[in-house]
Amino acid sequence: MLEELKKAPKKTIGTKQTLKAIEKNQVKVVFIAEDAEEHVVSGLREICKEKGIEVIPVATMKELGEACGIQVGAASAAILNL
Image 1 (cartoon, one colour):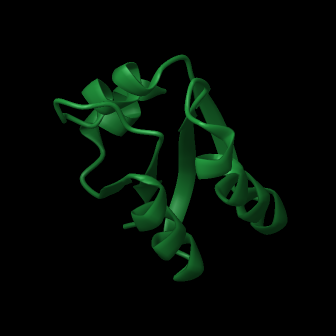
Image 2: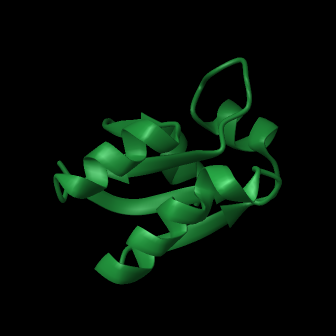
């Protein structure tokens, strides 16, 4: 599934950007790093549950950041609808 994120033409990186995209109903699937601090991603988990958006756990923030093509870790990311 991370391969899909790497190849996605449109994605968000980070919890704030992902939440904004969810509010606009643009998100297909959300990735959340399992080692992210819970207070950072708890609101994101809630809204995904409410809206029925699939959440895919990723082992580490480092791994998620690499899948997004950035040099730092990411707590969350999403693939957007085209």
